[in-house]
Image (cartoon, rainbow, N blue to C red; front, side):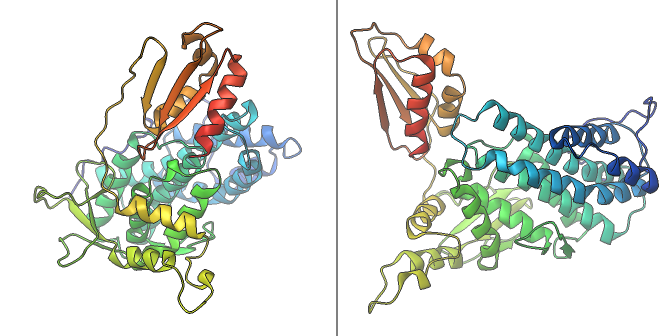
Length: 400
């Protein structure tokens, strides 16, 4: 049975000139000859080669063999570039922004390579064993999650196609009954062996946590904890009974996972339900004051401080508040921005900020930022230069 995948990916040109060779011997020679003395140039050339190979037609088995050869080099490059994003102020420096863009591009092309193979297998009925197919789906989902976590660490949300592709990939895995099969992923230090159900559950938990709203360095801790905490969560295709904390996602709608609403949701074979009661109870226990002078750290989840565990608990148990984006001028001087995404947009356009905010030198101008949790932080300043204004606002946003 053929499926309509709807996976977002570039097209391949069968008549491309100067074709990038995926023969193992030539590929290893190309990797060996990259200019490793100049690390930035080597990373760029690696990305260019990977991108070229994904824009050209190749046999599925040859592409799969090639991408497995390229994966270790890709991860060494990503690891070497990660230092530019550690302890970086926000907005990011020009160098850090370039590194982030290149990292996202490499992760995307790694996922694309596997998605091309998946699409060929599903839509053209090409022969690929279940073991190889589950590896392709697993690695495609893994690299998309890596994109998600990396973006969250710089307060950004994933691209719009993220949930569409993730839901479609998981739907393909369900169709071929692959969700429970374990796959090795030696690149992943947290879960070197996991199933597609594990990965999809992890993605759902990351969505519920609003990962991009945490402070600098905290997003990585949350992601690591939730990866290890998957054992406390059950993913089912039928609504669990008697469970206090149940979330749902509809694979056909391709939207982030949500807390079960008060009203009834439409019954659909595409609904998937997440019972996180055990996880919530663990977080509640870890944030409850210790009794009998026992050490509180014994109860805290690994990688999380007590305050961070409390904030995660609040995110997981709070129903989203409907809000709309609006900018309301008051006497031409007050602007209100709804959502972390819009606050980030302001920070990334510092020159526009100073130009667009009205007010004379002898009058104070107020900018009020409303983060995603609807708390309010008011930033006041007078006739600051564009750079000073951006740094002043970024300081308050980073303190959310």
